[in-house]
Image (cartoon, rainbow, N blue to C red; front, side, top):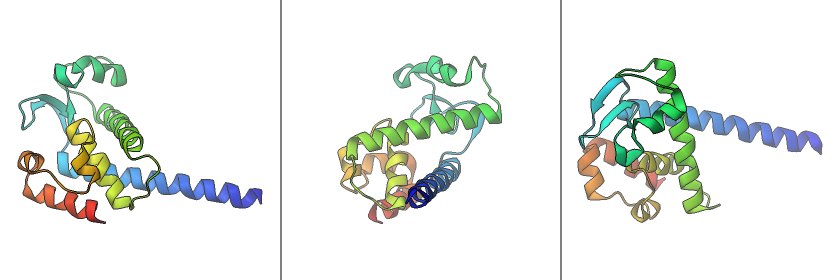
Length: 152
């Protein structure tokens, strides 16, 4: 009996790691990764894989709590650390909003990505419908891809 429990736990852990790696790849592809500060489409100072540095996002100080002090650029490992931090943060946001409702892996990733992009998980995302305003901000192709994931 213990073997079954341990095997189930190990399989669940492995599936979560694989899902997180896929989510990371998707975010890096969709957001891009820049090791030096730039302005995002909303004019916010940003670094790494979409880490907002403006005061409304918690400011540079919030990022420095995760990776330590930095100037205008960060290392690849600091970028990875920030991304891991934000993925875990937004997974908790999604979990808190939807509870134990079961979703496909694709829909789960889409919800985490929307939370990552928006900084929270809006009702329209939980309902499975992309909002026109966010589609304008992130582009038609990316919007369509996330909408397909929400429908899975």
